[in-house]
Length: 114
Length: 113
Image (cartoon, rainbow over all chains, first blue to last red):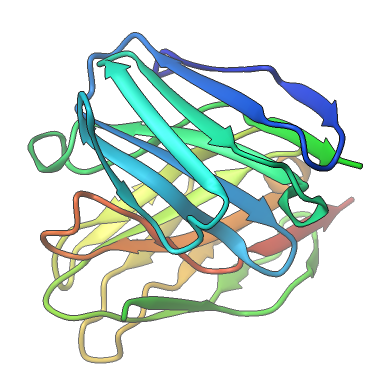
């Protein structure tokens, strides 16, 4: 299994508070991604990174920001959490085209915004 | 833009039955195609993939063939087991998109004895 962890695994927070989720990898892969999973929508890309300090938006980026100051860590921040951001968040990593483009997923973080 | 359409679930089968989960896609160029599986309470795992037309991906008895003429990548298994109960996601990566996956909505499979 790819070395990828997420923290916390579960979190309950209140509307309006900031929340940061962490993704950590030990594979030295170039690409990292944040997805959210909601019933009826599959997984939707929030933000992704193609290198240290290089990030870009996905299809559902509003209300979220990311940072990648080291190859191994990719942080997702909900600047002011809303109930619509209650979801399961997955981090994924990929070596990119040179590695067959396969993405490897973390175990997920279940977030409840009250 | 890119999109993936999967058959609606849930799919309920008896053990040893034949499984087909339909998947069709819309994409420019020549995407790579994937099936991921998610077991209860876990993250997604790659099940199989195909990177060019007429390629067949296979793993754990599951197979899918990349059909460019019908833009399809249907998942099949000849004899399902209770342990195959999970949610199955079809996905694609288009050329030059930083390896970003576009997912279908997932199909839940329930296998009973």
